[in-house]
Length: 394
Image (tube, rainbow, N blue to C red):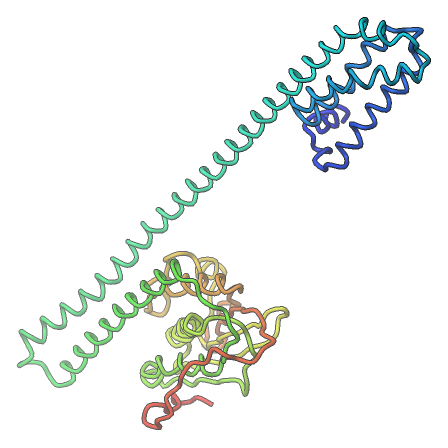
């Protein structure tokens, strides 16, 4: 303990404040003055030795030039103390003390130079250590980014290749055997081509969004969540109609801060997953509740639920689940997590696996609660032909 305290003192950990250093220096000079008055002239050699102490103290606290000035100050300070102690022969005092004064000047400067050099070396070592730590951190981030890019390239290449293969196979089938195919088979092939094209477009859109998130600074403003959710449902309307899904919405939405385009993407991912993995037909419920100082938004489906192991991998980078013959392309939920965390919230899922439909899963995300009226409104078309409510929505 004593050793550590001494290191703290010698490293100036307790002396960064200018008042503390000045008080310590003044105390040293006052202590020297009192000892001089007490010892001189009965013990002159001891007084000469003690004169080095305030000089060294000043040099240690303030550096080489302060040490030099302190040694020169001793030349004027000591005769003044001699007068106070009753010395009458000042010439004799000066003659006897001049070698000590010269030594004090040189010692103060040398000691201060050693102190300054030591501090500079200490600062250089600390700076080098800081740079090394930053370099190690950057290397770790780079290694993590390389792993992420490898997984990213593998996932995207696999899913784009799968969609392209479906398009190629069914297009080739139509070109070669369309004359022998029934109308139903032709329709099924065209639907598969269209679905695969939509999947590819979806992957490309999410890649563009991922690139935008890395480079773009967005303004966080109060959201009109009702407008954001409406836009998300309109994007998913063909899937909602095809699955005969029922969408249940709350009577009103609380206000939260965010970026409308990004939050819309979160809703699209959550709702599309609920449509994929929900029951037959899907029943998807959307809601919100306060979790101060955040707002918690959620999507609940009526599917089979998820095992704890599956839940642990849901929001990992570029992974996908295989369930009920559906496979996600691995970007959606990882992008959701990035979006929400960048907006100051968190994502999560609540689910227990069941063998029967209806138990379902609840995917949620949080955003900072807003205390201002929404200003970042999403423009919704008012034409009845383009603004129809999805089937089963209320």
